[in-house]
Amino acid sequence: MNKASIVDSVHNKLGGTKVQAEEIVDIMIDSIVGTLKNGGEVSIAGLGIFSTKQRAARQARNPRTGESISVPAMKVPKFRAAKALKEAVK
Image (cartoon, rainbow, N blue to C red):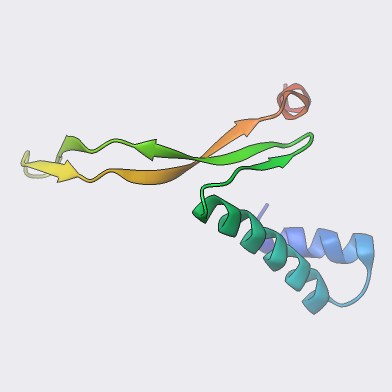
């Protein structure tokens, strides 16, 4: 499933135009991304929790040359699946 198929599902369920359905999906994605950028957490019942995690700086190795490189500290997105989602996938 990709964004276009999600837009189709929203369009089929709610009606209206596909442009309106795409705007709804874009608003939802932008809201999640904006909250994560600000360090917040997004919890969707039955799906899970989107959050961010601080990854520490570390030394890595370039597999092609074997050269050691430093990877800076950064925030990365994290997702924890809800129990209902885990049960549904089983």
